[in-house]
Image 1: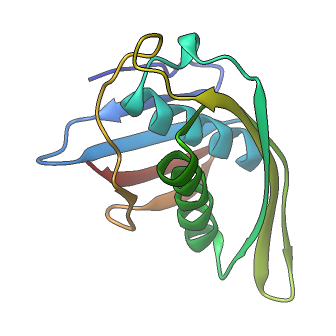
Image 2: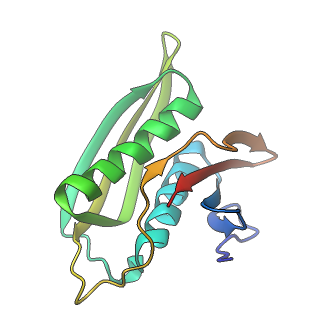
Length: 150
């Protein structure tokens, strides 16, 4: 179990799960918690410290609620990995806003083409899921929990 949570309300943790990977991320803001969630997903795939942020991808999508927004955002990142071979190491969520009953995320991800000579091959993340998904505000932190299918 990898743990990168600290008491300053930022980080992520990979938790025990029977077959997949249960991820918990926290942040002082909802945007920061989403960023930490993405880092946690890509740490399942590779060592993100070896991924240089040379390619930028902008992601601006909408969800029916916060859970759907988280699902769709991670799914969109994984589509870039599957279709273009990109792995990411840096994420900026500019804003998450609600309007007309929908939620919208405006974000960017930076990374590069996966290179097996440079990047550690860990585990393939097949898909984002709604399994055990929670999005909660606790005291001064936002806490996200979800499972990715490996």
